[in-house]
Image 1 (cartoon, one colour):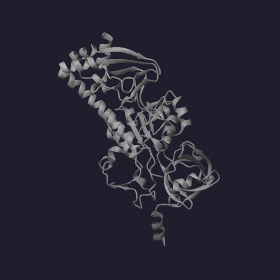
Image 2 (spheres, rainbow over the protein chains, first blue to last red; image 1 turned 90 degrees about the vertical axis):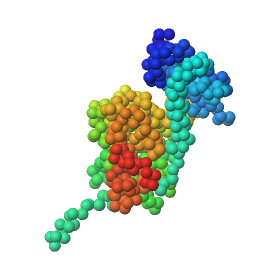
Image 3 (cartoon, rainbow over the protein chains, first blue to last red; image 1 turned 135 degrees about the vertical axis):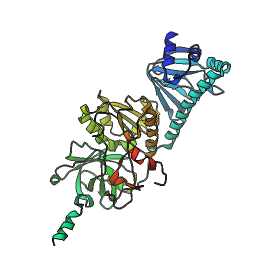
Image 4 (cartoon, rainbow over the protein chains, first blue to last red; image 1 turned 180 degrees about the vertical axis):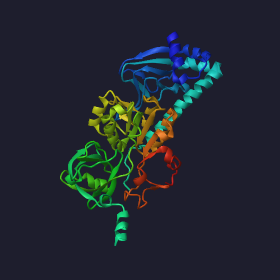
Length: 155
Length: 288
């Protein structure tokens, strides 16, 4: 627990969060390990966690009929993935798979949602941080959609 | 008579810049589905083709037209001139049909290149996407040939898919070096890809360099450069430490015709490489 608390306190995502809230988060946290190739979650399953990657690599993908899996994003050490636990109806919209041995800290979404309901200051601190992540993902997705390396005409 | 002679001498010598010289293609390398490199023999009477990383030549495909293309070869090997081109329009498609033994007209080199001298003593961050790697490859050659003069060297590259990664042989060499930090990302991939998926500006926040002691060189589509600049600024890189390569409709290469005018500047003569601090006020003007 002490180790988990230290890791969470030092993580840039939680920078500036007070001790009381860190301790509340630790109460919902656990160490998890995923083997290479192991699915962490699958589209449509109940979304009840988000993850701090400590080591390894995770890809977020979706399955396209007749094409197979298409990778949408990859996440690496020190990055966070998973925000469907925050948005009703709390279902994963994509698959996530470890592409190498991955160690992470999982934050139980159900536990955290309950704590956020009881302590709105904690809820606000969490929301502030997730809004940044969601905005960054939205911006990146828009750039990907622009297909900026696609064909351009010679003038 | 003496006066006339004096006046004549006051005119610049345009013989290398206004008249194309024929260069023979020694090798054509198919890099990607629509992208190829050409190695050209430098005429022996020229004594090697000296250029600064980031400079460009005007390439004339006889019967098709003339276009500006950055030099993508090694500046330390002046005996071979290399250009990497993507076949997207009439001239470049005609160029793609050329083969070894055919010839091209060349004028140049033109423009202001990358600040490799100013970067000495600092970390160097190269951020590039798509065919934007071609104008930066001479910089990579130069930095690696003079490795002791620089701090950390970080190369961040984005491509559309894994199949669109340019210079695959060079990447194999660059990745094997311990003194060069490389990160590649693609916009989309299938399940076989084990590398990063995401946009290239997203690599900046985790890249290992000192934002207060670095110089960043950015080359790629303008949208990609804009978002890269945002991320560099977020890391704390000052505007006068960011250099970008601009692309406009260059024709004469000398700042005379005005086709590539960018506010008070001419991309062909004052650029194509600019310090961001110098052009940031006009960089976001859509009319330009």
